[in-house]
Length: 344
Image 1 (cartoon, one colour):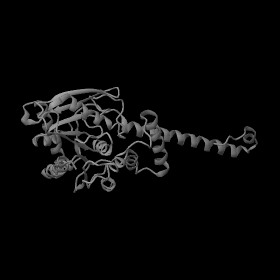
Image 2 (cartoon, rainbow, N blue to C red; image 1 turned 30 degrees about the horizontal axis):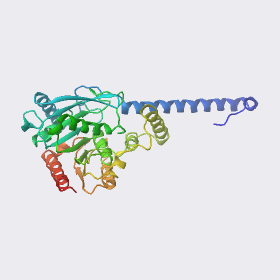
Image 3 (cartoon, rainbow, N blue to C red; image 1 turned 120 degrees about the vertical axis):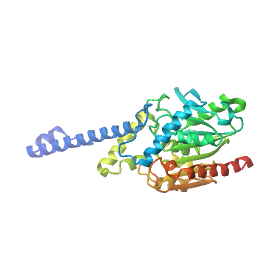
Image 4 (cartoon, rainbow, N blue to C red; image 1 turned 90 degrees about the vertical axis):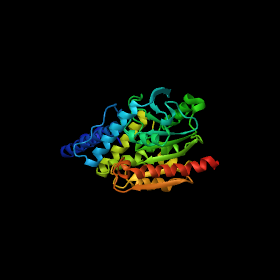
């Protein structure tokens, strides 16, 4: 911003000076407002999630409310059955999760069987995906349910909504192998919902992804943090929206180290070799269904599938599709296993 000499200002007519100072004050007020708005967006996206039960909104549809009630019952049953609370130190943080052994194994891991790593969404409470855990247990899988950093009971001051630390999941896979030893799973399925889906899609092209990860299943994931941010503030006027997103990105860089060089779900699938299944509800207003098509078109995996669940809102494809949800997932995993077992 050019510096205006004091002598020039004093030589200006009084009316012009008043206009100048008013404009200067308005500009400073606008910049301050945009910085505060950018900070609010950053805080909203990354504020640490507390471990508490989900309370559905008062206007929730009856069928959706019934789904949440089923999830609550499933959660109680799971915690009454065999499970282990696990903890590891990674990147200086205490990360925690729950391991559920395969049901036919009498509480002991069954060697050679599959393990589903079921990953929750943004700000979800622990065991929010209880019905998905139950789905895999019913099919003879063991299941690991991590609490991502920034979500209780794991450490982390902020939620990693940009998936910069998706590698935490790779660390958990190694921890599972180490803990189970000779009884370790024969293969892994990474199953993510919403932000969890964004994490597994980012990992799909990670060179550190081991060959025993046979499938990535992503339900209602977004293409990138920036794209999701733009979607969330789409109702703002461009004059307000663009500076706010700029300042929010500055805060992401300063406080979390995010940069344009970081991998995203979209750049991850562009490198993917593992089979990838993308699921999305057509009525999703939180993460637009168009992102699923963009992810599918950008995916370079030789085995991939896109499934739109008609009428499903965000994170409710399982509730809408019911048994089809299980059948479609299992059919895809079987297809992926054929390639894994043949070594292709």
